[in-house]
View (cartoon, helix red, strand yellow):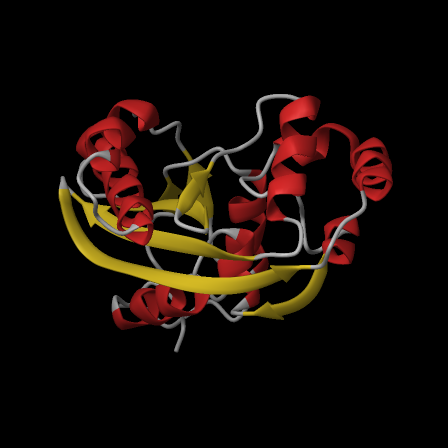
Amino acid sequence: MSEPDPATLWIADQPLVLASTSRTRRNLLEAAGIAVETRQPGVDERAIEEPFSSSGAPIEDLASLLAREKALAVSRREPGRLVLGADQTLECDGRQFHKPVDIAAARNQLAALSGKTHHLHSAAALARDGEVVFEVVSTADLDVRPLEEAFVTRYVEVVGDSVLSSVGGYQVEGAGVQLFSRINGDHFTILGLPLLPVLAFLREEGCLAS
């Protein structure tokens, strides 16, 4: 391999393919110095979840399964390319939560999380030519402080439609941090991508300067 370009940390011949249209995940990767191209994975997440839900498997396993399926779907369409898939699931009291479908659902979800600890499971999988070459899952535990109904209503009004863009109805890097009394976990895990182990793998693969 040629000497790394001092102007960039990414030294692979081609950019990493992100099997997602998530702006947050793309921003995390690019901020870390990774050249990224995005692809729509085109997988039916609910069809994958349906048989899983009746299997009794841990909810964090679903995040891993979805990340793998996204990476594999795109890697089969992109021969020779390294493809990253990622997903995140939220669990509270043994119940799985999804992105709220509307503002009313967001308010109900925040009320359900009020005063409780929930768990964010973030998974990543890297695939090449239809085979998974690396995968990881990481969990963060978040304590939501008791929330008055008036605060939930005001919070939703303040953050607007962004409340619909994440599985928890919040962004901890913004006003969503006011929902919590304690956060225990990796910051990148909370944002939906266990970035540090992904970076370590990419360095081992010779994609990043080390």
